[in-house]
Image (cartoon, rainbow, N blue to C red; front, side):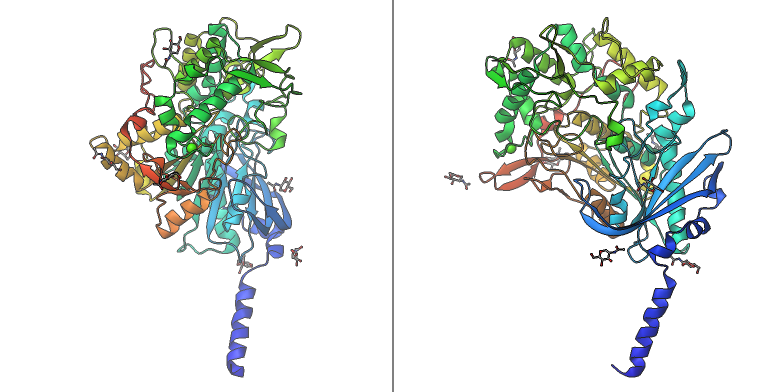
Length: 597
Ligand SMILES: *[C@@H]1O[C@H](CO)[C@@H](O)[C@H](O)[C@H]1NC(C)=O
Ligand SMILES: *[C@@H]1O[C@H](CO)[C@@H](O)[C@H](O)[C@H]1NC(C)=O
Ligand SMILES: *[C@@H]1O[C@H](CO)[C@@H](O)[C@H](O)[C@H]1NC(C)=O
Ligand SMILES: *[C@@H]1O[C@H](CO)[C@@H](O)[C@H](O)[C@H]1NC(C)=O
Ligand SMILES: *[C@@H]1O[C@H](CO)[C@@H](O)[C@H](O)[C@H]1NC(C)=O
Ligand SMILES: *[C@@H]1O[C@H](CO)[C@@H](O)[C@H](O)[C@H]1NC(C)=O
Ligand SMILES: *[C@@H]1O[C@H](CO)[C@@H](O)[C@H](O)[C@H]1NC(C)=O
Ligand SMILES: [Ca+2]
């Protein structure tokens, strides 16, 4: 190298270094204030520049089943804004900023779970790991740990519609709109360069993702959406179906009996997918071929437990109902279970009748179907019973999410559950589903099936759902896919419309997986860890995923409507087209007078 050339190289390096501020320089309130989005970005909203707080976090390590492990530095920026027309309104947002060197011209919003609109520190790392500014919102509910139920009622009988709209869709729209412009301003991205923007969330976070894709066509270039809590009016009431079946049939199976029926179903159906690996990859073939009556008379035995969880080792597969939550969100809503005694007996005809009804789903008293059920191979989580140490009997255990939904959100009582299930019938549940759908149709239902504008804007959606989800029925996602398909491509054959959807919307069912994660009742069941990276590659490189990559005993996930089948003694995975299996996923909801998408 000549001396002259060396000087040029050093000068060039120096210029490049000078052009980009270090994370230390960025991570100060004065730097951040100068980069806050202008007022016009979200109309009717004013950012409080004095509220800016910054914290530099160095060498932070992350690991999760939902994003790749990484160690990196980031700047945690929090600020507040208010809606001009609402006195006393304060909404907090947090954005994590990567260093300028790691920033890849991307923005990522992440979502919540259960009744929480964010997942604290557990989902937000995903974005910075992908070189993005990554955001969460508190919805204006008070602080990042305050859930929507805390602010839902202005007083008994009076709904706080502002909070409900914010939870439904508005807060995420504002988070992303502010976040995209904030990213541009911080890193000096010129107007002629694109800042790609993405969404990632599961469960309630999945519903939040669809709420944006359905309403704001050009807001996200890509979304990775897991097990969404959509069709909210039905979904939340559905948590009570197991309780009402047990009450109506007058039999409350001991947990050990439920566990035995689940275990026997898994064992019987494991091999139907062509490989005995402890994973029921084909819940549809299980539904078509397994006669659950064959479990009657099998003996079961469980040790006494102190009562922390369902008796599967390791507790509830896949996290809590409607999504893994940060610890701070979980305390009140999911109290520990009663201790359970040692249990032994044989599987009863009554127990199997309860489970069969549970797997069949909700019908009204006229025999019309009101909702979808869970897949064969599930652990019957929403059918759990409770042991009463005084009476020595098994009885009702009112589902937390379902009970609170009915009492607070439908009956508008300031209480966290129903006092009892007395007098409730299948018809009550159906009426509650109708009430929820009517009242929250434009805020929470989240099933608008026309994605034409999103497709036209170039958006891509990767939608995935555990095959044995124990909280949100897997077929609920299939139904939404079908609603979009038949709404957007009414004149086309099944295969033509699937090919058209493949251009921007792909669905993957994850074999054996539970709710937003692997499933301890089917050890080694996979979960896709790189969904955000996959949708980024689809958007930025045009590489559409034929299959999804997952971690676990199975690393390749077939794309709907193709279904996994192993051949050559379980060594080769094929993705097959099987009409009877597909038909088993489709339900006619004939209990309603209006379309249910
Ligand atoms: C953006 O440009 C301003 C003005 O030139 C500069 O002060 C700032 O450091 C730049 N930001 C980054 C992240 O380099
Ligand atoms: C991060 O870790 C590396 C390697 O351990 C160390 O050299 C560096 O100083 C650390 N950075 C900070 C800001 O602590
Ligand atoms: C961000 O920093 C604030 C302090 O300014 C802290 O209270 C909060 O927990 C941090 N949030 C995240 C998601 O890192
Ligand atoms: C299982 O047993 C119930 C009750 O005897 C009966 O009604 C039902 O038809 C049986 N199912 C099958 C598939 O044999
Ligand atoms: C879907 O939306 C597009 C664009 O707004 C519109 O042209 C089309 O008519 C809609 N389709 C249906 C079935 O409503
Ligand atoms: C639809 O496509 C599948 C392959 O994906 C094929 O097996 C099936 O025969 C096709 N159906 C029709 C009606 O063409
Ligand atoms: C499957 O395994 C059996 C027993 O080991 C063997 O006889 C058979 O040839 C194998 N089949 C194939 C297709 O590899
Ligand atoms: Ca198997």
